[in-house]
Image (cartoon, rainbow, N blue to C red; front, side):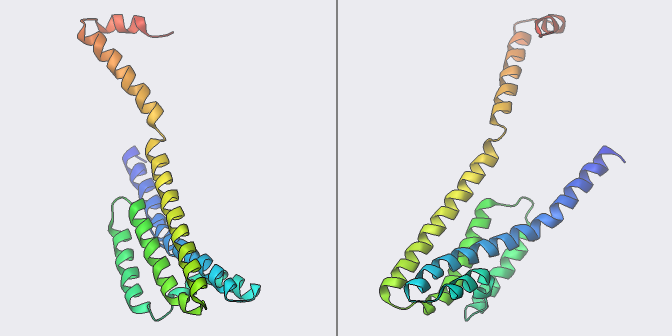
Amino acid sequence: MSPDLEAILKRYFWWVPRRPAFYFSAIWVGTQIAAYALAVGIYLSGAKPDEIVHLILTSPALLWSDWLCPNGCILVLAAIRFARLEQLSFHGWAIFTGLQALCAMAHGIFEVKGPKAVAITWGVWVFLMVAMAYGTWFFLQWHRNRWATEIAMLKAANASRAARLHSGASEEDEEDHRAP
């Protein structure tokens, strides 16, 4: 198998399963954020622990609500976007996750009773959204900087080689300067 064909097949077989995983993970994380925020509000409203556990375990069901029409449009547009992009974007994932969390919260907030419980529920939701955004940002920074040391070493080696070549040293002199 030629190296080019092998690289193409590796890229394709990594590309295909990654798209749905990226899409469904955003839906799952968004509904989990809403479920945990709603769990706090429902607990403050006097719900039983088994109702809270049921809410958290069935969090994607929060999307099946009166908000299905606008959320259905968001789901379809996101599916098209994630399928068509050359590179998957962490920013796009975070925005899509936030929209899913908002749609799930819009459905479940009516189960929370009392203005204090509603305010605390929205506060927990905002806190979890900020935590998700910072986590995504830190992951993005780690992803961008994981090769920074190696790139800096390569740039330094290239700069020293360019300086030696510019000063008139020949390739034989350069080989003499290399470590054995």
